[in-house]
Image 1 (tube, rainbow, N blue to C red):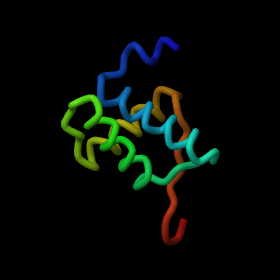
Image 2: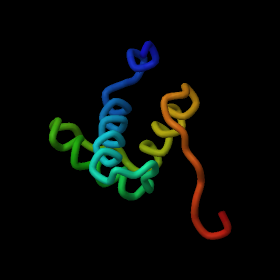
Image 3: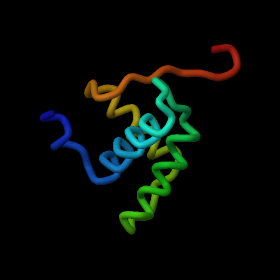
Length: 78
């Protein structure tokens, strides 16, 4: 995928975290909280300082905009 070459390290770590969570759970979806926990763990495995929640959310938005992932909002009233 050409889009992957434009991602920075933490975006790639987040994508790998998403793949790991989906493979472990065998589910089609994952919550932001679960994904963020896996991202933090994986970032530390790479000796990288995990980014804060807002930045992780922005990474997800970019992955959605460039068509790598699909997202949907959930929560009260959704």
